Amino acid sequence: MPFNAPHPGQKQEGGSGLQSLVKAEKLLQIALVMPVAVFIGWIAGVGLDRWLHRSWIYIPGLILGCIAGLVEAVRQAVSSDKALDRPSDEAP
Image (tube, rainbow, N blue to C red; front, side):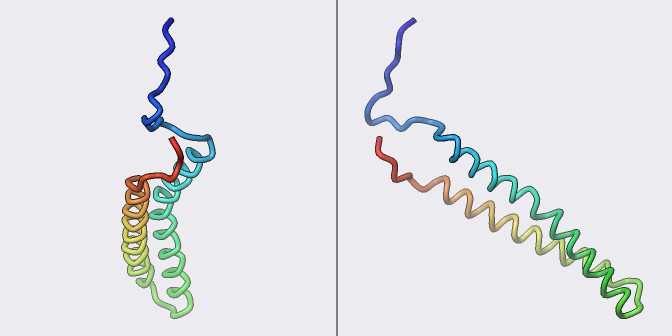
C-alpha cells in the first residue's frame, strides 16, 4: 500500500480534538438559543400574567422570545461563518 505524504504547503483538513469540540459547542449553542429564548419569554409572560392579574401577556412574551432567539441565532451563525472563513495562524 503506497504512503501518500502530504505536500509541505498543503493545509491539512481536520484538526485537533479540542478544535472539533469547540466547533461542536458553537453549533450546539446556535441550536439551543432559540428554544431557550422562547421558554424565557413564556416564563416572563406567565410571571407578568400572575403579577398583573391578566391572562394574555404570555402571548407577547412568546413572540418576544421568538424574535430575540431568532436574532441571536442569526448573529451567532454569521459570526461563526466569519470565523470559519478566516485563515488560521497555524504553521504548515
